[in-house]
Amino acid sequence: MNRGELVPRRRWPAWFDVRGRHVSGWAFILNRLTGLGLVLYLIIHLWVLRLLTQGEARWNAFIALAKTPPFLVLDTILFFGIIYHALNGIRLTLVGLGIGVSAHKRMFWVLMGIGLVLFVLSTWGLWTMTK
Amino acid sequence: MSRQPWLEDAPPAYRGGDRWWLVQAITGILLLVLLAVHLIANHFIVEGGLRTYQDVVAYLSHPFVFVWEIVFLIVVTVHAALGVRSILLDLGPSPRVERIINGVLTLLAAAAISYGIWLSWVIRSQG
Amino acid sequence: MTEQRTVQFRVFRYKQGRERPWYDTFDVTVTPRTTVLEALQFIRRVHDPSLMLRHSCHHASCGTCGMRINGQERLACITRVHDIAGERVTVEPLANLPIIGDLVVDMKAFYAKFTPMAMPLIRHSEFLPEAEPPEGVDTYTRLENCIECGLCVSVCPVAASDPLYLGPAALAAAWRVVQEPRGQNVPEILAQVDTAHGCWRCHIAMECSAVCPSHVDPGAAIMALRGTLIRQHLPWRRKQQGGDAHEPR
Image (cartoon, rainbow over all chains, first blue to last red; front, side):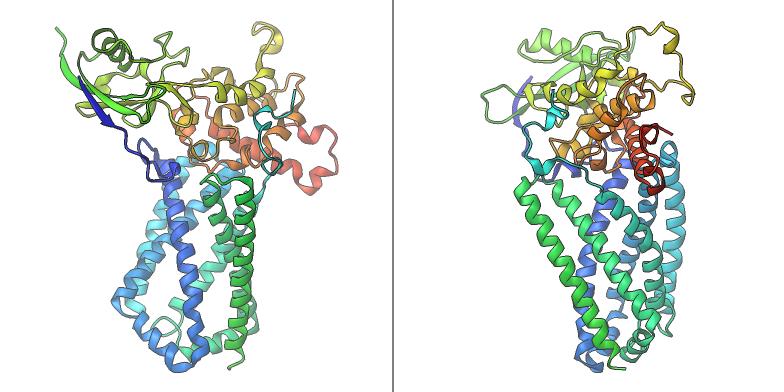
């Protein structure tokens, strides 16, 4: 017998404890994380748009910057967040209204399949069309 | 016996229905269309992706686009504010703090929407 | 001789008056049939009689041995050590309920919410004709299955955040009454769950339904309550309110 290892104090909100989670639990956590990310993006996005009031040169300079690979990587992450949050949101709305509750796991994987296709297509579009 | 004995010690703010979830769901469904159009219009329509200054001004000067983007702004802000509220409520605030959260988020959302409308108007009038 | 092996049990310990909980580690020799509950009883008998744990029936009927095994809510009595991956098994009490000591949690808060909802479910006799599934109910998915083990409350991310949340078990009980009222006051039950800390608080993580050892499916029950409440408040349903608008589906 070995005594004395103290239980560590929790550093995260309880909903973020990922031990022993099932698919739907992970879906919930990922929904929150993508949601927080999207709120952050919304704030930054609105703030950056103020450049449009500062004349043509400043905006066009920013657009040139936004078309560089580091920004396209950020856009790719953004697309992932949007697509995941949107498709999982469809499931949550349906299930939350009492529709298709027993099929919620199947619904999740079907939507994620659709999401993968959308993500690949939009990312491909982003990287090939941006010039 | 009280109707809800487990709420007996709870402050009054904790009682009563809360259907913000429904608003979150409805704005979410609206966003599927609003955001999809916003993304396609701003990323995949213009030659070379992303709009230059002239592109943005021309885009927003179209009355339908202007209204569409404002509606998008309002809906996305409400959805975001409700989402943040839901996460903050999970940190277990007291009823007083909960009221402060509601107030601050309402103010922030109103500010974001006003700012966005002002911005769109300024850009549009530069055309 | 069946295959024996030694497994390390890392057991959550807490005694009232102590500032912080800690883990003790015990080596236990197990066979493929040994359950976690049996291993814990062995630890208590051989290594440390001060280990507090709760159990009764040993066959998933009583619901008293619910705990977190390697972070997963399970009934210790039907969880075989061999079915758990790894050479180390961490055993902790249920979450979201106050700890009395070691692996024993205080179920008082659970019953304060569950009992008012489940009281109408206490039938006079299950052998009377009215105990047959009524029209509109194909089979009993039977909340009567609920063994009140508290696994659903432990795994629920909302119960973790909001101590006033009614919780999966109580909401499932409420839905069972709405589904099959047998003369109970359905509007009253619906009013009790139609709160910011009732069925609207759920974040649809569906963990409760995943861990329920008794197939009660509380998640589906919560969603069904929402569906009922929303349909009830539809403008064209509201007009004809006066009893039948509260009827389920």
